[in-house]
Length: 298
Image 1 (spheres, rainbow, N blue to C red):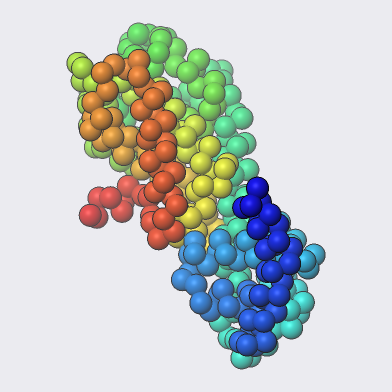
Image 2: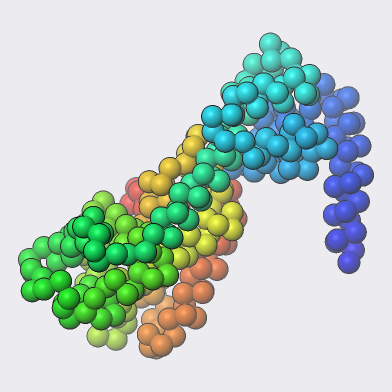
């Protein structure tokens, strides 16, 4: 109750007067102080996003909802609204523009990921079938499929003889993530597939991969991926960056699974949630980058 009351009083009363006092002392508005005093990346962009969202100015509040094409005009509108002298504060315009590109880009990326997730796997779609066969060839280069519908699919971790039924939850997003990891990190993918066949600690590689797609998707949807993506991309994040984060999850989950040594695959949900909480905790560090390339450099 106390925290709620404090939050209400701060956002509706104290914050306004604090900002006014600081502007009188520094000659700069809050947006200028953030851009000039915060490290570029998530530290700066998250503060800008928060400040704009709480502003009493409609021009500023609307800034977090503009599309990429409107960002430049929006920056000029804010400069005019806040009476900012960009001849004195020469870096402000560029800094704010980058922040707004990141904010609008994150929203756009989520929509692209969501749209791909909504595309169901269609065995009558030639492109869908090509992607599925590509996954097999990347993971099992020395073994040919005997048929399209075959128990061989279980060898790479699908549940039955036709993988299409396993993509229901994540649609084509699940398959494209699996193919991306197998294509860009082929050695790692084959090693993890081999480890997933461990007699005691084994798990269904493809099914777990689809499950991790859901994890990456939920973190993106909740906004938890903002800190990572704002640090990673000094502009508009792309689908490529989402796929790269998925690769990180696959690689790290395999390590986590074998370090934890679960008694049985029946405990998968418990360890999956434990891993999920671990990743969410890491994402609270506004200086961190969660990429597979970053791990391999260490």
